[in-house]
Length: 640
Image (cartoon, rainbow, N blue to C red):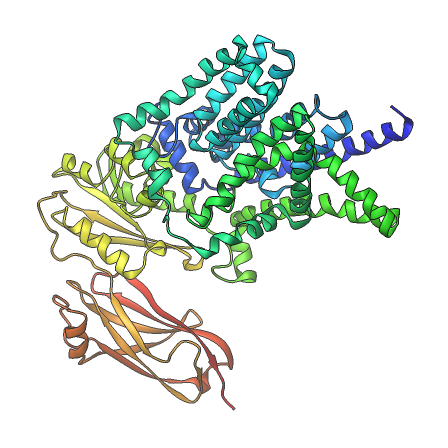
């Protein structure tokens, strides 16, 4: 190796180590301060109910989450710890895969480029199945290449073990199998392997990984396969699916995506010339890319267009450094070497910046309170923040209102219930009446198997419970249906408290159930208020005296008082009780004690307010103390 080559290798190594350490430190820090995401909390919950497979996935993700949580129960970092190790190991695994195929410097560059694909660099922060899926996938590729090249039984056995691990992780490992079969059937070198005992050893070991999937589906009416293949997808043509490539380019970063497409073409040419190693990588990459590209217009394009094709990019990264050199040579001829170097350097810089932006974007949730005044409401996600405060608040209510050693908690969605079990441990016994998100996420069958779903309430007859609703995720009709469901399974349901976090972005209501009884009906039922703001309309420019009017009703309970909110602040109590027989008829109001006097009105003097953009809403207090903010409108005040 020449002096220039040595210098290049040292430079690449230094940049890789610096980038790797920065990303690893950020991951560990964020994993420490971020609450568990809804998928993560489900996998943790699954780890407390050991099984070979669950309704949406085999056992591996739950197993890894459970092993981590042994280190420190109720710690998000502990749950994520194994995933952090596996995710941060991926660049090194890619180097290991690449080293027999390309030179040391190019293998190191391939490892560095894996940090420059935002979704790849992000791997390990969250305890999700993509981490072990790609971990086992890369190990499978490396063992496959070495087994084909050397025909040594340890490599064939290693291949079988990694394939078994992949099948035990996710249904999305099947494209790896399809890729291997493509190579073994259509390439000359692959067809020769069928006569080797090592391949059959790998097949025998790898097939063991199929048992959890097969056993669960055969014993549960194919519910796992049914969800992944049918239930989660509309299977109707959606033109938005054609945006798949553009979305992927945005997620990978356009320059690097262009490099990968060019690399794909170069790899095809190498494979056609008889390069066995190129054919191996191509056979693994293409199924992982083409399946989701072709099916995008008919499938769940929200999720397939984001992270599912990620496995297809890693094999291409092996040859990506060679592609970058070819592009550099072409640019140097046309633009000169200095400009060409800057253009090429911009590719990994932009990608690595994207990785940092992705990490910072997710991590910003931990600083929601500090950033909210600057960025406003609804800008930041709140899925991984607020759960510690919520759990502590719930613990206080349980200790104050319930004397049982193990308190029963019922939730309107499965992840709220799981968060409480995670934070409060064996002091609570959780159930959920979720028939919405649990169905969409393919987990309703699992909660039935765990006897934590609505049907399990039959076994709790006569017991008291705390019922929790996450109001910020519910529309008013949704909340009405939720309360109707729980009131049909209890002797009495009464509001205990409400909790507002993150300036109202995360809201919960707490109810006491006195005597669970699926054959009874709580009367009155604490339904939410429903209403409408007739005027002013969304986007109106208002001035002078402006009339604010509309209607509100609350079945069983009734409205006590209403307030006008301007910019989120109370400015006046509104006159409530105007006759609205039309509302009674159209909305089929039956049990509101105020009926038919359901209307409200108020004359707002806008000259007392500052000109500019603001919001207007109604704050409703019903007769049991439940508070709701309703009908928020964006308006502009414009007075002379």
